[in-house]
Length: 254
Image 1 (spheres, rainbow, N blue to C red):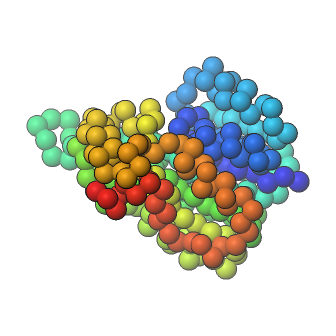
Image 2: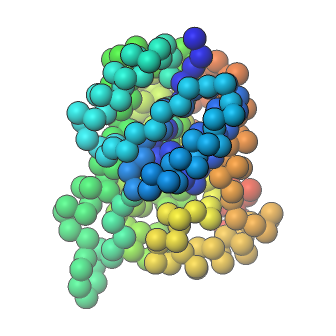
């Protein structure tokens, strides 16, 4: 029975690139998305249909506990024995200032951003583990950014979530080491995605990245997929608890 990759945020950007890459390497894909139109999902499915794998895409809120349980149960029903990769690649948070003239971050904004971009990594991992889908050789990978340590205009709530998800990865790595399951955060460089363009200061971020990156270009979703592909045959959990920079040297050059 083939392994599965469960991707939260599978409809575009890094998540979509990983869905296609996993399929091309013989790994079944279960993709969760929220905002994309069905026609965009059909295009993604068509890209994967040439590969000899099963794939499922579900439009749900990844923070909905009941829907989460249904997805995990469904993976088992359709023959899932192991989730080789659990990818958290959700980019959905509130972009407002903490202190400003009007329309500041409120409690609901912060809690939604944290729950969507950080906390639900814990709940999905718990459910997958309880269902015996995370096993020796499984890898949990969560997308973070330099924004966990740096701050940009209106990025405060997301910065909190990014710092939080790195902490979650460290804690999970300690608790899952005994089972041979690795947990790491992936710090991509500034990547040209639709999510990036929603950040008010994204033009500054792009300019800064191009100036700092020794490769003189932005990170591409394929750069992230190239690295994660190397882990397909990696059955060890010895590389765990890290924030892995995949940014072409952008962060250390800034």
